[in-house]
Length: 341
Ligand SMILES: NC(=O)C1=CN([C@@H]2O[C@H](COP(=O)(O)OP(=O)(O)OC[C@H]3O[C@@H](n4cnc5c(N)ncnc54)[C@H](OP(=O)(O)O)[C@@H]3O)[C@@H](O)[C@H]2O)C=CC1
Ligand SMILES: O=CC(=O)O
Image (cartoon, rainbow, N blue to C red; front, top):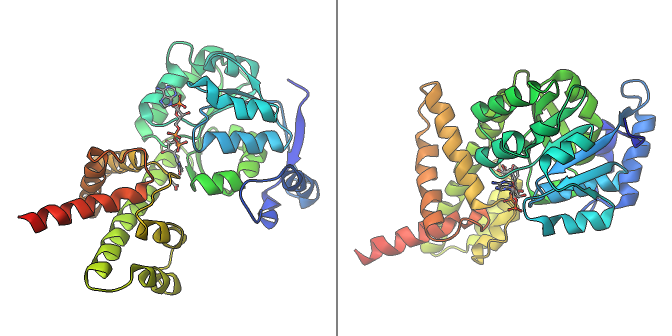
């Protein structure tokens, strides 16, 4: 096992950063807080090298926070240029997921969807080719339970252990180390990587068997996707009846249905600006997976089904890579076409 060792803590919640990203100093304070937190008898220790596969909107800041916390991190990304900012921070590079997994003790993966998560874990040159007993693989991508179980089977067939750990929280929480981890799978791996989760997140849930983390994430995101559609409908209707949608955002923010998401996205939605934090294509993927999950237990989720159709329309309008709040544009298009009829 490599020499890299560091301490960190669940108690880090008290040390939340005031602005974008965690500074090295603040991450160092988290480490210091761990030593004095008393959790598990005087802080939690992780020893070893950490791999990180997938450096998109979420993966890059998560890996960056691990590096800033003092971890020995090795990265890989399909588009190699996205590794450069991490290499500047001190990360190492390996040319394939297999080589990352073989050179690290624990490897995290943050991929776009079920297909890419399975490919990177199980495909040619995939992580499973570099895994062995004693190593761990933690998939933090949002996928369905069946994909997660398939990955688990392949990973554990190498003797390594597997944890699924999708996250709730978007680009800014990832930058600020404020994610919520929804984990399931190998409990000893969960305990082993807890210090790393605590660097990247503000809380973590252990939910039992593989599939439960994926299911929890899909349920959360189906609620989020429907909320965004309902909010979009409200913004458009308020404008149409002569109200100022900015006032609607303010009114909502003060009442029982206030949500950080509305306050955060509302003002830019009013200006028809959708800077990407959570790509619309990923929200639609999550609704598609949630619908399949509901169907597997014969539950009807008609609101989610209707929301999904709107996200599909938004994708067909070329908005897949915009923030998911751009779903409001699909409603505008529908309104225009019904006016023309
Ligand atoms: N953005 C958000 O707010 C949140 C996203 N999530 C989930 O996290 C995951 C990642 O999201 P996010 O970072 O936003 O997504 P991005 O689209 O920014 O990044 C996706 C990553 O997957 C890689 N990838 C895609 N296809 C393949 C493939 N076939 N083989 C290898 N690598 C591939 C991309 O590589 P390349 O750079 O080469 O394209 C990139 O590293 C998704 O499952 C998403 O649903 C969860 C919580 C919040
Ligand atoms: O998956 C998206 C999020 O914001 O959480």
